[in-house]
Image 1 (tube, rainbow, N blue to C red):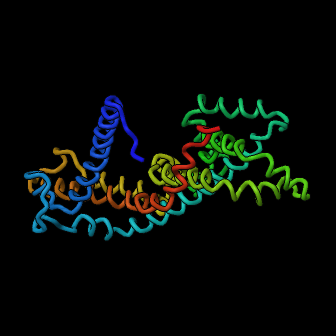
Image 2: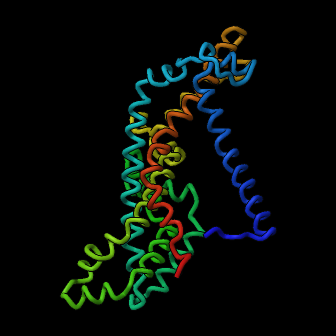
Image 3: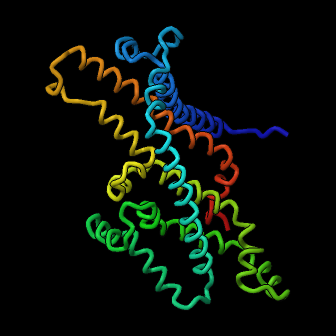
Length: 293
């Protein structure tokens, strides 16, 4: 049976459609521009703008990046750091969130207050650097994984999700003789796929796009992740006008920098675009944690 909408409802639906279309354009247009620009000859791009003629396209930008041996090493490091960071962050968030979801936990409010304080107050860069150095993690993988592994917001999301798990399931498992660990791993954890996948996606994306911690804590170039390698490539292919007296060399350097810039953006974004469809069904459930009772 068709639903009859009033004039106001039709106006509101039309307005929503327009806003949604504008939002899609805001996301899609820059994405299309970057993808097409990554395949274009920089000279044509700078002089004429985007062109969909294949004669104006080139793969030189991707070749220049992939010919750099540091790229593959940086890509592998980025995957390792992001995956390890996601595992550690999810484990900490899930365990802490489950413990804090129990009202009978001694000192629950104290721990929660302590966690929330860290969301607003931090030690700063220099004390953090000195702490990482004193712990012997400087110039190691752990320097980019451990300092940010405890995310209070993720713990709050996990706690809210676990509060929504029916107590009847836990009581039934307890009657059958299951321990608290057994209830968590056999009952609660299998029901927690939405929140686990959402937290893993947040952590992976955050670490994948990060380069500042690696720039501060990792001195060995062989340990640099992809984002830091791309940053180095772009900086090496940029120069101030006064540094190069030959105008032809300056133009070629500018052309090379423009070519690499868009190709680097596509390469660094591709893994995230591939991942998202597999996480989407869990993402829609996980982001609504706590919104329904």
